[in-house]
Image (cartoon, rainbow, N blue to C red; front, top):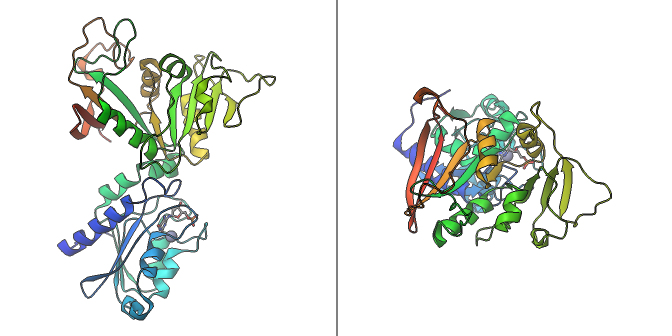
Length: 369
Ligand code: AOF
Ligand code: ZN
């Protein structure tokens, strides 16, 4: 049930959203969640979810209150960015903890899309006589957990396609030279996005041709993403320096040669194929979903990028535009079919446009989403 919220409600939920963000490099596969507890108009407790297996945001918020002040919890309002859980997962239900604390009101930004919760936390709080209001700043709460929500609802990760080009849309000169189009700040921003993702997806061609390491080399990185490499023509060699990085690899090949031995950080699997003989990218994303990967960072050449786009598997574009002109013979951004009419041309929603160092960064999603 949505009701009218006051400006004070917005202020506290914004604080809870800021707290949720603090888990963004570490909470996966769990969602990022923030909680603020308010009594007599003052914040008495705050918490966020740091890592799977550790206490949830609500528990951290309750625990942040000194024991001599715990009586203030009675009748207090808890602001939570995600519905408090109702199930025993790695930790006990937060709904029960809020009931035991005798809070009077719980304001929730969004329902938990996890089928194990899905409204049952809200119901349990209401049954206990707590006033529950939902939907406050819901679109913002959803944006904090795009990957978790996508995986819970559709069984696959949220896919971000990274593209970098000159102002005239070129990604390499005619002779293939491409390093570097964007500047150091934009490249560091890419490492930050990799650190925010649980998997980086690319092709063997990119690894071999560009010597891409695909690791997250950024201060904020807490763990290295799984490097998922599509090697359709079985080209990548076990001795390639790519495997010497301290980061796991999932190598997807057309067939697996059981006699070939691979480094210990590399798991080799056989791809599923679509009817037209290409790798089944939807099946691969479902496989990553099963492996609890919330966010995929897709960083590859124009043909794999085009295949993801055409399979309707790109949820967000992150485009870096360098103020350079690389000429008409240069290579383009994305392999898409020839469109016969402007009606067929995909349109995008701009989500964010800003300068990153000397370059422009555009974040866009497909229109209507
Ligand atoms: C909350 N507050 O801060 C988070 C919630 O295995 P567990 O016990 O960590 O449970 C994970 C699930 O709990 C996760 O999939 C999501 O549904 C919910 N996350 N819930 O009340 C939190 N992180
Ligand atoms: Zn919980």
